[in-house]
Amino acid sequence: MATGGPTRSAALGLVLLTGALLTGCAGSAAGEASGKGPSPASASPSPRTTPPAELCARIITYWSRQVLDGDTYGDYQSMGLSNGQYEILRAVVDAARAEQKRQGRAAAEQLIDRQARERCTERYRDGGPTGGPWS
Image 1 (cartoon, one colour):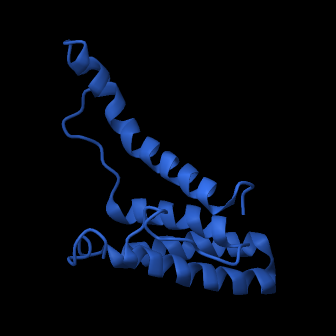
Image 2: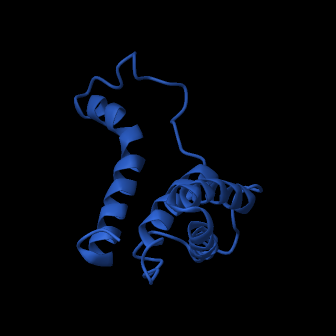
């Protein structure tokens, strides 16, 4: 786990996630604020968004690596996860810990990448959960 404890890691994760989400809007927001609108080079027919399954996989991958060596998962809300995503995180980390014991760290990280992508794809295959934003 990173030096500084889970609170610092949680804060860093939220900052990274927020930055990634806002990056797509930065160019057009600056142009609109100047009254010139988006520049022709940055104009696109529709806003660019990250599909929910891809965003889920990124978050699960990040947090799985953070908690792989630790003995606790922390609070799912401070990680920016829904309850369902937290369940995926726990399953992925449990499998990665077992893989790390058998095959080492590199194999565990490959497993994290694969399972996070597969489980998040499954979770969002029909567009997402319907039990509210934290399900």
